[in-house]
Length: 196
Image (cartoon, rainbow, N blue to C red; front, side):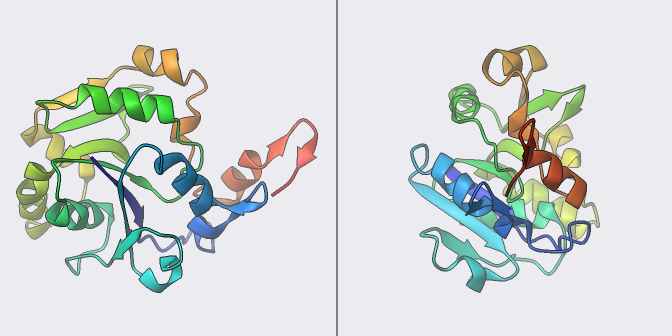
């Protein structure tokens, strides 16, 4: 299984590149890679500025299609994937839980996707996708569809329930993403004050 970090967003709400936000003395991307390396032999970063990631020991590539959005990043990774399954998530998710990732990996066999459900909603950017979905995604993109959830209608999906998640990550820190300055401040604050 390959890990895929989507880092192609424009960070409009944050105002700066989210992957390099300082978090407890290290950039977010270093926290992410530290979690992934024991779990995955291959790590791909899909980025619109690949030169920024050249020193991190991961494969870096640009989007394969000139269509903006995370669905294009997912397609790019699946189209070059050597194995079947790919764990895909955003570069602004620093609190990934290795136990939850491992649990999802164990559920993947025979399914097209393994998708966590949080508060009744799918989390498509913390999901395992099989390479065979690449043609489904390309078809959607060519028809102008950019919603990731649209591909689940054409896939055999193993949904991870909130009850399953709670056994491993009851605070659901896995799904915290740093989209805005407010979310970033909350992530770096504790009872003893804020630090980054």
